[in-house]
Image 1: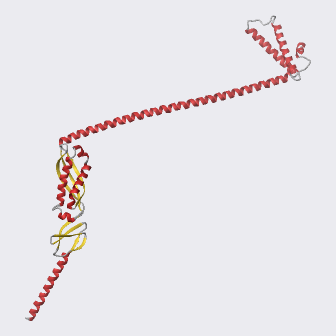
Image 2 (image 1 turned 60 degrees about the vertical axis):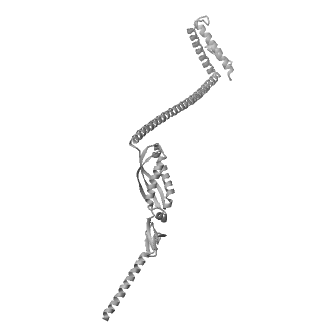
Length: 345
């Protein structure tokens, strides 16, 4: 009996210790919170906001503090469903986009709105429709960046109480009505044709200008070549004239020197008896030839008498000239005249 009672007593304390250990472990487990990176947890105490837990190991009071919200603080893309909007010129278009937002304040995100992501999505749709209504269709199609910036600015102004920050908004597609699409295709085709014609006209004009400039440059180079050619020809002609003149002057000098040398030789010969006789004989022959030539070519009778007498007169004149020349030269004072010797012979 005692053993049984003692056994029951030991079993009770064993169970009690196990229970206490479990309670302690649960309490410790409930008081430790490990928050993942890029997350923020909102802690409430008795239903009231107490604090926000950042990434890492955090301690809370078990059974008193409670983690109410867990927020991912990373940037998040949200698709904006396709919707219809009417432009300023009453053209109904389909438009959709993507919104990129991030929770920057976990407390405001928890208590500013029951569903901040849904609130921002609805706000983005209404803001997009309002922005499209302020613009014509052409502006809507060509100014997407302006629409995106305007939507982001308006959403951020309204979403501050929700603890959200809209980083950017991108329009995926703007789809006009089918008839407008056809009109735009025709307009785009006409615009392409116009640009093509302008490009061709510009190319033709540039080609004409380039060709004209080429012709101008060619004419300029040709005229320059002709001028250089004429200058070279003139320079060559002048040089040729100079060379010819120099050659002619040289020839004249050589001829004059030769004639002077001949005259000096004749003079030296005349200074001697044999030389005077040779010169006299030579002059007599030339005089006879000249008389014969004149008689043959002229119709005027220069002297009367027969030919022999005329020839003798001519010879006598030549002998007299030679005698005079001999007396004028140095050493020509010989008393004996060549004419006398000739006459004696």
